Length: 109
Image (cartoon, rainbow, N blue to C red; front, side, top):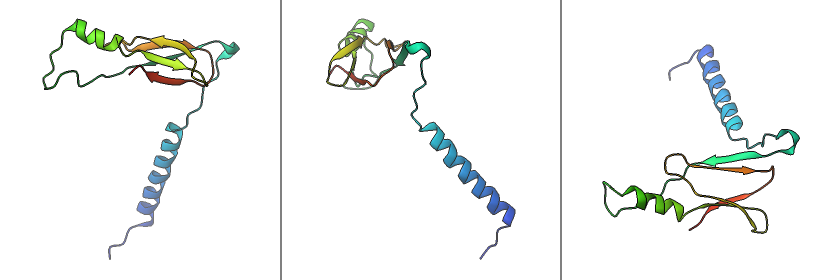
Protein backbone atom coordinates (compact mmCIF):
# COMPACT_ATOMS: atom_id res chain seq x y z
CA UNK A 1 0.00 0.00 0.00
CA UNK A 2 1.56 3.32 -1.02
CA UNK A 3 2.03 5.91 1.66
CA UNK A 4 1.36 9.63 1.30
CA UNK A 5 3.13 12.36 3.12
CA UNK A 6 1.22 14.39 5.71
CA UNK A 7 1.89 17.55 3.67
CA UNK A 8 0.25 16.11 0.58
CA UNK A 9 -2.76 14.91 2.58
CA UNK A 10 -3.12 18.37 4.16
CA UNK A 11 -2.90 20.04 0.74
CA UNK A 12 -5.62 17.76 -0.70
CA UNK A 13 -7.89 18.41 2.29
CA UNK A 14 -7.35 22.16 1.96
CA UNK A 15 -8.27 22.05 -1.74
CA UNK A 16 -11.47 20.13 -0.91
CA UNK A 17 -12.45 22.68 1.76
CA UNK A 18 -11.77 25.60 -0.60
CA UNK A 19 -13.81 23.94 -3.37
CA UNK A 20 -16.77 23.41 -1.03
CA UNK A 21 -16.56 27.02 0.19
CA UNK A 22 -16.53 28.36 -3.39
CA UNK A 23 -19.55 26.22 -4.34
CA UNK A 24 -21.47 27.49 -1.31
CA UNK A 25 -20.65 31.12 -2.07
CA UNK A 26 -21.57 30.79 -5.76
CA UNK A 27 -24.88 29.06 -4.99
CA UNK A 28 -26.04 31.57 -2.40
CA UNK A 29 -28.99 33.50 -3.80
CA UNK A 30 -28.94 36.72 -1.88
CA UNK A 31 -30.61 39.81 -3.20
CA UNK A 32 -28.56 42.95 -3.27
CA UNK A 33 -30.55 45.70 -1.57
CA UNK A 34 -31.40 48.65 -3.76
CA UNK A 35 -30.63 51.94 -1.99
CA UNK A 36 -33.70 54.07 -1.45
CA UNK A 37 -36.12 51.34 -2.55
CA UNK A 38 -35.54 52.14 -6.24
CA UNK A 39 -35.54 49.65 -9.06
CA UNK A 40 -33.26 46.90 -10.22
CA UNK A 41 -32.85 45.40 -13.68
CA UNK A 42 -33.61 41.86 -14.78
CA UNK A 43 -31.57 41.01 -17.87
CA UNK A 44 -31.01 37.81 -19.77
CA UNK A 45 -30.88 35.96 -23.06
CA UNK A 46 -33.03 33.17 -24.43
CA UNK A 47 -32.30 30.59 -27.07
CA UNK A 48 -35.08 29.23 -29.25
CA UNK A 49 -34.80 26.01 -31.11
CA UNK A 50 -34.87 23.97 -33.05
CA UNK A 51 -36.37 26.34 -35.60
CA UNK A 52 -35.54 24.05 -38.54
CA UNK A 53 -36.09 20.31 -38.89
CA UNK A 54 -32.49 19.69 -39.97
CA UNK A 55 -29.07 21.29 -39.49
CA UNK A 56 -27.61 23.59 -40.68
CA UNK A 57 -30.53 25.86 -39.94
CA UNK A 58 -30.64 28.85 -42.27
CA UNK A 59 -33.57 31.06 -41.34
CA UNK A 60 -34.40 34.54 -42.61
CA UNK A 61 -33.78 37.33 -40.08
CA UNK A 62 -37.45 38.44 -40.20
CA UNK A 63 -38.65 34.90 -39.38
CA UNK A 64 -36.15 34.69 -36.52
CA UNK A 65 -37.35 38.04 -35.13
CA UNK A 66 -40.99 36.88 -35.42
CA UNK A 67 -40.15 33.74 -33.41
CA UNK A 68 -38.77 35.89 -30.58
CA UNK A 69 -41.71 38.36 -30.71
CA UNK A 70 -44.12 35.43 -30.34
CA UNK A 71 -42.36 34.33 -27.14
CA UNK A 72 -42.20 37.37 -24.87
CA UNK A 73 -40.72 37.28 -21.38
CA UNK A 74 -43.51 37.61 -18.79
CA UNK A 75 -42.94 38.83 -15.21
CA UNK A 76 -45.74 38.31 -12.72
CA UNK A 77 -46.29 38.75 -9.00
CA UNK A 78 -47.75 36.26 -6.54
CA UNK A 79 -51.31 35.57 -7.58
CA UNK A 80 -50.44 35.62 -11.28
CA UNK A 81 -50.92 39.29 -12.16
CA UNK A 82 -48.58 40.19 -15.05
CA UNK A 83 -46.61 43.35 -14.25
CA UNK A 84 -44.12 43.41 -17.13
CA UNK A 85 -43.46 41.87 -20.52
CA UNK A 86 -40.44 42.17 -22.76
CA UNK A 87 -39.58 41.07 -26.27
CA UNK A 88 -36.14 39.55 -26.35
CA UNK A 89 -33.68 40.35 -29.10
CA UNK A 90 -31.70 37.40 -30.52
CA UNK A 91 -28.40 39.32 -30.15
CA UNK A 92 -28.99 41.67 -27.21
CA UNK A 93 -31.40 39.69 -24.99
CA UNK A 94 -33.89 41.49 -22.78
CA UNK A 95 -33.91 43.98 -19.93
CA UNK A 96 -36.76 44.77 -17.50
CA UNK A 97 -36.72 47.35 -14.68
CA UNK A 98 -38.32 46.00 -11.49
CA UNK A 99 -38.87 47.19 -7.94
CA UNK A 100 -37.42 44.96 -5.19
CA UNK A 101 -39.66 41.95 -4.63
CA UNK A 102 -40.40 38.36 -5.51
CA UNK A 103 -41.47 37.61 -9.07
CA UNK A 104 -42.20 34.69 -11.40
CA UNK A 105 -40.46 34.92 -14.77
CA UNK A 106 -41.72 32.84 -17.68
CA UNK A 107 -41.96 32.90 -21.45
CA UNK A 108 -45.17 32.97 -23.51
CA UNK A 109 -45.56 29.47 -24.93
